[in-house]
Image (cartoon, rainbow, N blue to C red; front, side):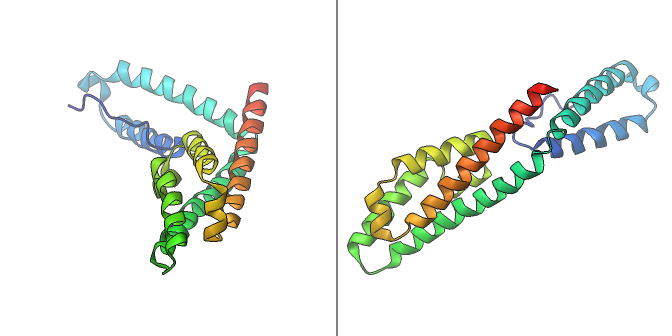
Length: 171
């Protein structure tokens, strides 16, 4: 018997799909014989309530926009990290040291794993990392444009998230 499963790391869409499959599987069985009819009815009621709440969240029309910005942001985090990491091979010691300092900051907040974080945690990690990276190191490495674009997309994501939250409060 499965006693617990940690599903906190999956998206709402994946969770919805898993629960839909579980409910479909249960409905194929003789629940009375298995003495699961009451539990399944409670599960279905709770799942339907979850489904209704999930539909409400989609009514804002901002979910797709938010997800599209998140993909851009993910690519920027990974690209920025990889670009800075490549500079460690450049034969200029000042540039290599600046790149290493930037990587140290990024690694402190998760490195390329920042892109896999839950959206709120990702926003915070990007904001904090960019605040901690020295402007002079970005200038020395010539990669200030990466940081500026990442800041722009992260700020845009945060703004759309706030707008989505405000619209959800209307429902």
